[in-house]
Image 1 (tube, rainbow, N blue to C red):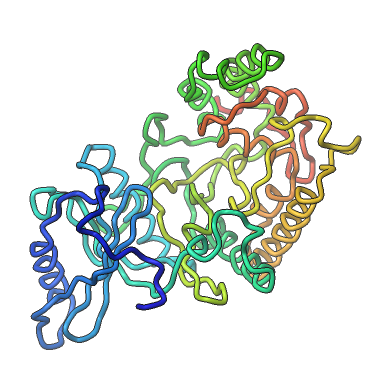
Image 2 (cartoon, rainbow, N blue to C red; image 1 turned 135 degrees about the vertical axis):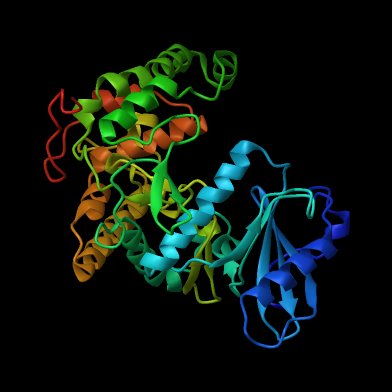
Length: 401
């Protein structure tokens, strides 16, 4: 417990909503007793330490037999969108726990009625460790050098397990939903639609509905004069061009489609002091995606060349900066580790081939950066795009029909 880099002054934290802690304790005691044949639990102690991450508050619950659980509480009042997000995350954790070796916390129970404690919440397995960024900050170069190779290799194996069609098969693109009979289905993606039967259906919807999250006024205020018009035109044209060129950029139109963690960064990886991976957390935005949207983990992020200055690259398209070249080298090693894991699992090379393609990684990263509002001339990624035959050939127009 002393090793957790968590806060302790919850009473004075303005980000923490009003919670009925006694009601939470009673819920946890009843839940534990319903799952155990041992003598009934009578007490539940809430530890002083707590953690805030994104949209949630986490507190440790300890019972009279020494068992510890985590209460993960939503910081904001429940909306239909937040309720669906909670349900999809619980469903994703459930299928990962049942059908893969991906280390994820087990969910024991949840409640969406905010009248019970004041907010919706889930009760889950306590993993005794810290996130990678609790130790390091957000830059991958801050991961202790003596642990980098081991950490990257272990994360590559976990990444391959997420995408392995031999362990999880999803015929559609969308959000995972567990039904009452224990089966799983795919549901619509918030603000986009679906579920989608093909990648080109998805990219058509993406091009139709995705809007750049910055106004023209704010873009102009952020850029030097010589870049303003080109960036504004490109950010305006990019979704339309994705829709129009979806047959040119799609090589794996039909499922099964891989599961993607939407924030695959070491802030969502619980590790011990030697960076052994204990668990992957925060799956609330996870879902199945086209293969063309698969990316490297964010701790191996580099800016897509299409969004960068051309003079930062040589004639072969390789970065000139030493730091960027080192990250590219780590990405190549990561892709090789994924390929090794695929071979061991008897899976195909779907993940490693996409990660190994500079062309598709440029496009995949551009989708995400666009959704985040990163400024750049996005259409360059389409202007410079060349189908990578090592991944596959573009499908023929009309394959949706």
